Length: 166
Image (cartoon, rainbow, N blue to C red; front, side, top):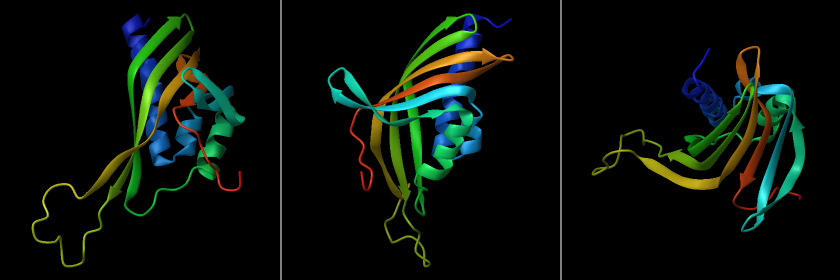
């Protein structure tokens, strides 16, 4: 039997695997973290404490996998993203849990090294890192066959989202 600290660590690990799979654009790994009947909904901020749903909810791990593989833009050459999560609040009730966490997503762009090397005076890391998204994850998890899986996942974006043609 796990202690509540070990259980909280396992729950937090699910979120860590989720953001890493997002950064790698790995739909298979991300989808595996969800129950078959999970609901995932993105929300955008409309006021200081209010949000509205954005788009249709995704259903189950298969829906998440399809979304990652078909709707997320690939990273450009030399680019990647890096999610960070902080201030995890975890409530556990038997085989159900709720995880609330803040997140920031950074856009990472490596500078290209010229064929003849770095320019004179170049020193240290070459590229840029800038924040591009922030918000909260409100996530309900369920223990299934001894493993924690995401059953309901709300992404509360701090900013609006624009899509081409919408």
